[in-house]
Every structure is written in structure tokens, then in C-alpha cells.
Length: 203
Image (cartoon, rainbow, N blue to C red; front, side, top):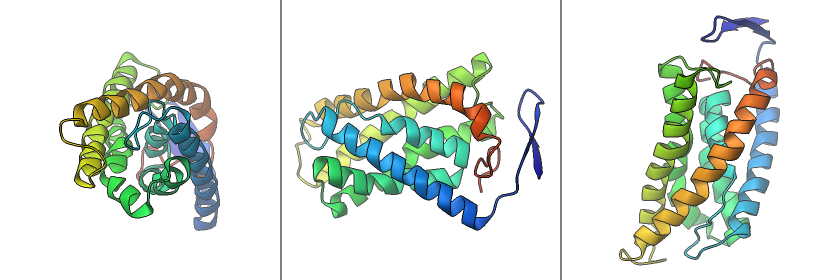
């Protein structure tokens, strides 16, 4: 058993991680993300392969916090499949969104570790970091990188980019605030007792 402490000094014991356990659980997490991502891509398309409702963003951010770099890797790989299913984006185009999806998961994961914040969102500082970084800043970064990639592929023009940027940003941000906050508050106390929860480590 491993022991770790969160920022409220609560000691939690969890079973040791194994490669097989990490692989199986993260495969299941990837499957969930693909389904949610494909649903979001199909649910409210606004053109240019941009959706006005993409709840998988909440899972991207949470995965980075809970599962460290394992979650970040899942976060930038699963959209290649979910976008191909939900919006018929060619995989080679979806692959160019890896930088956008990387920052949509890594940024808040780094902040929570750097400042020793609590994924259960118990303090005002936890909430501010989650909303400002996890739901707003990293989606602004992702929207900028993602829509720029689409412009370079010729999917829409530079003049149209601000419109699609706004659609990406809004479509990612509000599901992250609503669903992501609920998942962190409700599920983290249970997930942190499992073998695949790596916080505050990265691996």
C-alpha cells in the first residue's frame, strides 16, 4: 500500500500501481473519452469541425489532474479517434490538434501540482485555479492552437478564425465548468483510493 497526503493533511492509503492495472484502467478511460468526445463533436456542430458543446473537455482536464502524464497522453490521443467518428475529420488533420489537446490537459495538471492544490476543490484557491486555469486559460490556448491548425489546413480563413475561436472556447469552457466541477467534487474522493490515481505525482 502507498500513502500520500493532500493539502488538507489528510492521509489516504491506496494499493500499489502495476503496469497491467494502469493499462487496463486507462484503456477504459480512453474508451469513455472517445465516446463522450464523439458525442460532443456530433451534438452541436457550428462548422469548420468546431462544436459548440464538447463535454470531453472536462475529461481532458480531470484526466491530467487525476492520472498525471498518463491522463495527458490520453487527452491528446483520444480526440484523433473521436473527431474522426463525430466530425469525420481525417486523422492526419486531427493529429495536428495534438498541441491544442495537450495544453487542454497539462496546464491545470501542472498548476495543481506546482501549488499543491486539492482536486476535491475544498478551498477558494482550489476553485480559482480550476475555473481560471482549468476551464478558461487552457481552453483559450487550445482554441488558439486548434483554430490556427484548421486555418492552415484551409478549413476556414483567417478572417473567420475569431468566430470559430469563440465557438471552440465557449463549447469547451462551459461543459468544463459545469460537468468538470461536479465530477471533481463528487468522484475524486473515490478515485483517489484507486491504483490509477497518481496525484500529486506525474507517473
